[in-house]
Length: 234
Image (cartoon, rainbow, N blue to C red):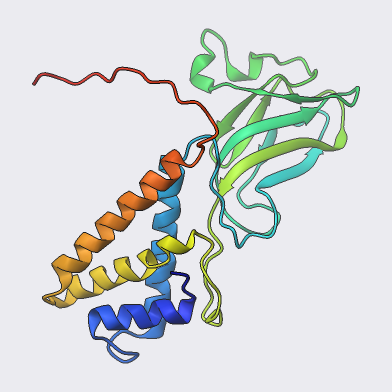
């Protein structure tokens, strides 16, 4: 069932037999936002080739920025809307002829026998990118500038609720809106030692499995390759 923030708060109070005094709205809001983050973590972990994104975001999770001659490092803490970037999974550039090309990922631990500053140190068209801290490092560094020459594809934080977002609905499938009430309800009941804690926990875990299964299998248009899984005899 589709639920807005006000309805999620009401569902929490029904589960917990709480009210705005015993479970303050500000505390509910914080717990709902934490739960939304947990739902996103489950989706990202379980997701396949159909990348997850909060449907309340108004644009795609792609940043286009300048590629600068002689600049090897590019920092990406937040996107253009201020959302925190969680992971970068594809990098493209436009070369000096105007051709868009995909870069290959590389890790600094793969560069052995020479200093990182010596690896592909002559400026040219970048071929590789290394994800380091909150940004990427290009190898080699570019020997030209293009105002829109670097494109980053990424996963990001959800569109969190504000206290004024009473009629706003979470940007996850409607069937999982109840999860945003179940986890805060479980945490509240656990803290208070309430008798319904175990039942709410069971419902919460079932919902988490449902989220995991949904995002694991939603690319139904792609053929899956079966492989044998190793299981220890111990």
